[in-house]
Amino acid sequence: MIPIANPVLGEREIERVSAVIESGMLADGGEVRAFEQEFADYCGVEHGVATSNGTTALHAALEALEIGDGDRVLTTPFSFVATANAIRHAGAKPVFADIDPATYNLDPTVAREAATKADVDAILVVHLYGLPAEMGGLTDLADDLGVPLVEDCAQAHGATYRGDHVGSFGDAACFSFYPTKNMTTGEGGMILTDRPEVADRAERYVDHGRTDDGTHATVGHNFRMTNLAAAIGRAQLERLPVFLERRRENAARLTDGLSGTSLSLPTEPGYTRHTYHQYTVRVPDRRALRDHLAAHDIGSGVYYSDCIHDEPAYNDVTHDAPEAEQAAAEGLSLPVHPNISADDIDHITEVITDYAA
Image 1 (tube, rainbow, N blue to C red):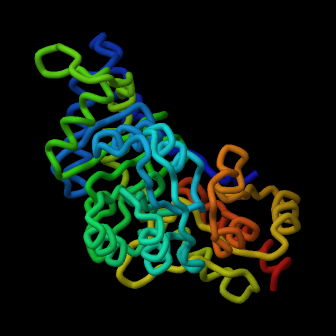
Image 2: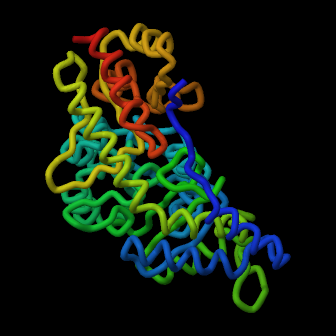
């Protein structure tokens, strides 16, 4: 079976973790501080705050931006439910705006209409599947409304918009290091920001509200990353450029092999650099294609079969998102990770061409 995901871990990660184990300093500490700075430097941002996962990063970032009870946060309904869960955890309410069907990301024009109508207090944009959202229009919208902008970069490590890394546009940005992401720490997350007061509040929030003098001035959580996770992350960050080149090469080979089929293929605007966390096609009869692929030992994934507003936990949230609903009905992700070979890709394209020529 060609799997839909396959994390790349090796001797470098083993050596880094072994060193931490030998040191006896397993919890939050020096490895975490080094990873925070290295990842912030990579993205071109001043401050990094490591967390236990991507969801806690989003939650802590919203808390650090003082988004809370009764506030309204504009976001996409076409994402993993954690995006909206973090808004709810902070005490705020999600406001959904529809997506651009070509990019799967928030449509800035639709977002402006929804944000103005709902009088939102913040914007949470997702760079879905590794493709940067239209940050020009969305940062303009946040500036015009005078509200903070948060980037959910959980799937977009290393992606760029007009030459700048995602994670460098918002008042805060959040990453996930889950095993299937472009790089991993096993579990883990990161908040990036250029605003020192936001970094300070985030650091306190993820550590029980602890201040530099050891007192607890505010209420917080234990959202800390461990040295073990950070050690893996530092090794993965060194290898990230190679991982991303492999993903882009694999995506280009998939596109070349599938260009003559009836499938709708991923797009990449010329001012962006897609990192292909997922290579997602669209097909009206998704179930039939998934079954056909499985019969030929090819894994696939559906991200996501339901919009967030169709989840039972969110059926009380009003919405008008036909493009997101159509994408949820038709999207199918194919293997694109660094561990698949050219022969694997050729097999995938041949099987799909036989089905969808």
